[in-house]
Length: 278
Ligand code: ASP
Image (spheres, rainbow, N blue to C red):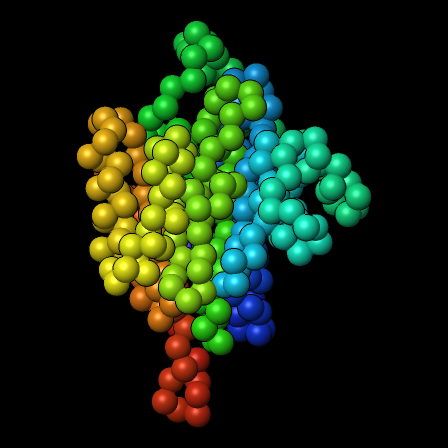
């Protein structure tokens, strides 16, 4: 909800859909309380906080960074990859070098709370990453602006206590996020390995291209995972947004929540009416 509010605050100042999703993602990246994104993100099993993020606009422009460390705003770095380089994706030390060339400040992202959580995990884990419903939670944002342009952003510290070097779905265009301004947009949260194997966000958009609603497409893409994988202890959720503004979302297990924030022109001299729900 706070990410949506940040995006909407930007919209009220005339921001594009791309600016809106970046604003929302940045807010969560800076929040040390959120242990799944940016500052305060849970580290890998060796104690490194490694971040993945991507961003995409309605014209198939996309930018992505993966396996980056000590960068507070990977979403902004992903946007700069999209806008300032001929590439879509930069990884690790190369992405950090690009951030330095832009003058982006560095900071230690491991908070005392996340360091303590790692210690507790190390005491019982035998150094084996466990993939379950509890230890992941990406922030994915989709937006449609007043001109009808779509955009999406995805940012995460990835699976908690993962192997060093593991990259999930979130920075992979088509897996963690996909936007086609003529059709719609989709984004994922949950176990990246299952999303990558089914190229989930691209699948949701392609199902919408074939005529499905955002809700039906999300359900179908979740169904693909459930048909082919053991999902007893695995969570994936999709959110989807049609080019006309219709929204939908679905997940393997209950208690997956997402927030929708709408801003519509009212009848009285085009006044703005806000509504928001989770
Ligand atoms: N999808 C991300 C990943 O697998 C984070 C999450 O689990 O939500 O890295």
